Length: 252
Ligand code: BLG
Image 1: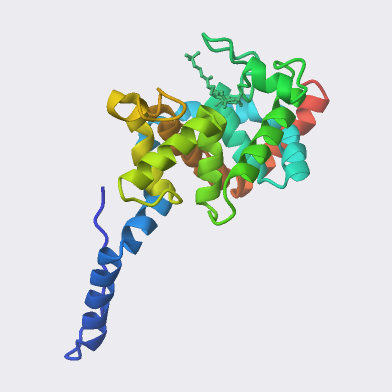
Image 2 (image 1 turned 90 degrees about the horizontal axis):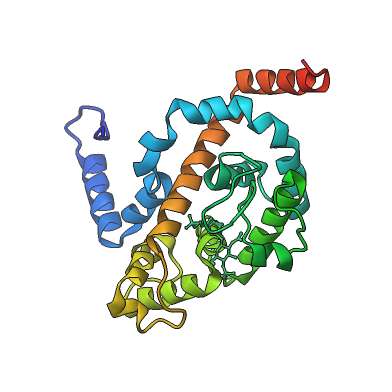
């Protein structure tokens, strides 16, 4: 943790300083400051976990095999490929054979039911999994009310990808009941965990849900996305990624 400060030119004229004090008072009162902090730092409390060297190792050892597929699927559905790659890292650590104890499988961890709905026949096939996951995310996005703007729209779609649209709707209703804004991720992320509490899930349409999971899920994806944006904008990454593609083609 580092504290931030604003610096002002030393002067007898305090008018700028006074305006700044009023400005910060206002954005604290109307919660704009809280929104800004959530938008830029809300997901970084897990950064110790994602900022370790495993991610960097996987970036070199696993990502190059799938990068083109992420790019193709992203082009088809108008996403940033790094968002799809971040989801896949959260889901499977870019392991195409990944399987959960409940049988959820593949790079994008599709359930059997979701795979059937998407016409995915082999969930361990990277192309089918990535294109299926991208289509499913697109469908989730379309279900989010149009008045919810980016980036919250994407965070809602991700939560729905993970926990299902019904439970997300329940959490939004809880948010409303608590007098908060059901269209803001910053508020809904506080209500989702309440779906584990009988007091709340007994009144929810879709019942009990492991509501803490989508909150961690979205935070982690945001952190992976930040890291991917950072690494891929770095010239060295671009060179090493091209090199690994060339050496793959030559079976080196
Ligand atoms: C998601 C499905 C949603 C489904 C929810 O589960 O899977 N998403 C995908 O298949 C992409 O369709 O919503 S529903 O159709 O409305 O019911 C809820 O059932 C997947 C989640 C589950 C989770 N990962 C993608 O995020 C997972 O792997 N859970 C493992 C649980 S355990 O470790 O086996 O206990």
